[in-house]
Every structure is written in structure tokens, then in C-alpha cells.
Image (tube, rainbow, N blue to C red; front, side, top):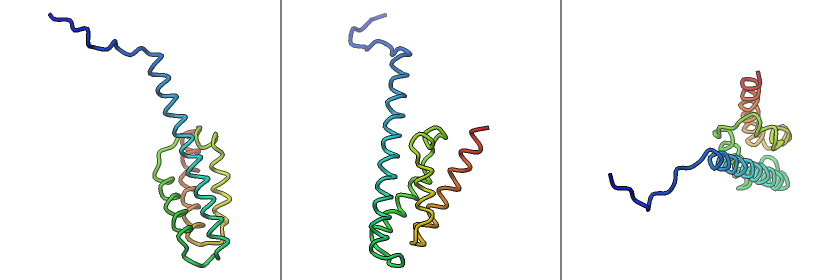
Length: 117
């Protein structure tokens, strides 16, 4: 059997834990960026008028659809305070933003209810 010195050593358990923690932190940061972008777009859409179809309103709706499709843990939802922000967006005057944010709130509410018991 030939032993090559080019092979890297096997990863130890501590490296795996660090890697997972790093990924979780990136997901938290990305979720916070998505929420802030959606909120800013909703504010701009509100300033332009509630019943106008503005690019900002469409951008907010697309971000909300993306957020609904993500698989998130209840801990991440609670840590980022995203649920409160979405409750705020669900009272928006634009009907598209309001309906999509309510759909995300309902989806996240089921995640929080199913996994917290």
C-alpha cells in the first residue's frame, strides 16, 4: 500500500462545529438583509401610493415569496425578530404586499407551532 503525503488529514469534530456555526451566522445575516430590503421597498412603495404597481412593491413581493420558500428554524426566526417585522408589513396599504406578508406570517407561525412543542 502506497501512502501519499499529499492527502489532507481528516477533519476533526471541532472544525465541523465551527463550519456549521459559520453557515448559521451567514443565514442569519442574509435573513436580516432580506427583511431590511423588503421593509425599505415597502416604505418606498407606500410613499409612491398604495394602489400603484411600483417596481418597489414588486421587489418587496418577490423578496417575501423568497422568504416563504426558505426553510428556517424557529430559533432563527426568533433571533432575527423577523416575525414582528412581517406582522408590520402585513398591515401595509398595498394589497399585494399585505397578502404576501400574511402568507409568510402564516407559514412561519406553523413552523413556530410545530417545532416548539
